[in-house]
Length: 392
Image (tube, rainbow, N blue to C red; front, side, top):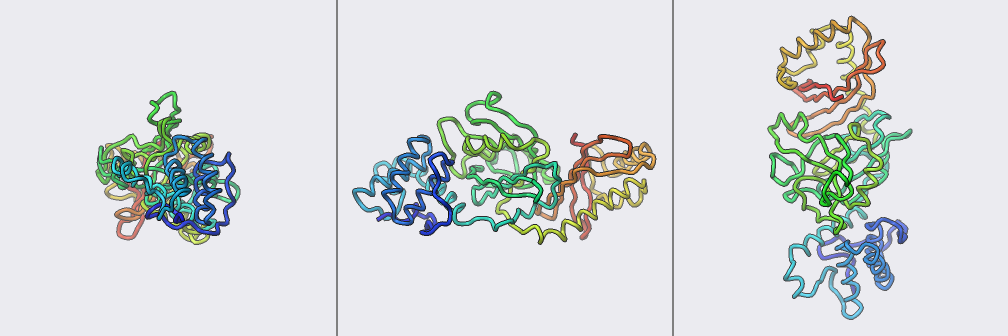
């Protein structure tokens, strides 16, 4: 009799509310259906589905392993899945362990779902023009895709994802870790621009961001990307720091998200909260930024500068040079009302509380304006801007 999951993997629920996936469903959904059938003791049906899956996706190594287990189980019982014959196991023990971890993470996605309607705590406010948002839970090897519609952000898909060989929390170039923080997609690269290693394409991120630079973090080239054509997926910890997804799943993201406006939160472990619980914080921070806008529009330099940290820096400009720049901008504005368009507020916690604020700054009488990004941090319990710059 086969146990309901790979060695060290969570037990598959015997009764699962999810319907069985069709043959045209994504490969992961089909694999999870096989695990459900195994958990229910329906090994004949599981074998049939596994045979079809490996025929359709021959480079899905985890599916191959499950199929092999089910074939062996027809002739002799298996105490648990992943029991490759000893002569074979001795030749690739590390790879087999990676496959077992991959199975554990994929099964966790089946049994440990986010609460209905909940969002990652980092998503404080996103404007309607931000059509999508992404969150990555490094501890679960999971990427979550959200769509922004009339009812706000809604989770529309989630996918297994691989991160750095040495885990998360990147500090320096070459450390083989995936950064943690709030980032934005900067561009879209299709397969024609890349080698086969990156699969169907890539979405570069703005690592290191301004907060990372303040912390002395180095490196670059952190992307969401696919996998080589001879692979279906990579093991949970196998990249040089990027986030890698199966090509079919990355393609759906490439087809949907927009560079520059799509935020990507990468957390060690996501904290999920219901939007109503975040509303008081959202209003408070919205009022904070509105206070900055009013001071900026009125030209009251004393009040305006009270929002900035003494440690402020933007490029080569320190706080004194920044004040001079602001004074010139205020004089050019000549008292015209100022609007903030498409305000986005994202939160982060590292050594302290951080806000990443993005908006279009438009003076009365103008149709367009600069797109700016601010980084706020708490100093003595008060929010202060430590970076501000134009991003478009």
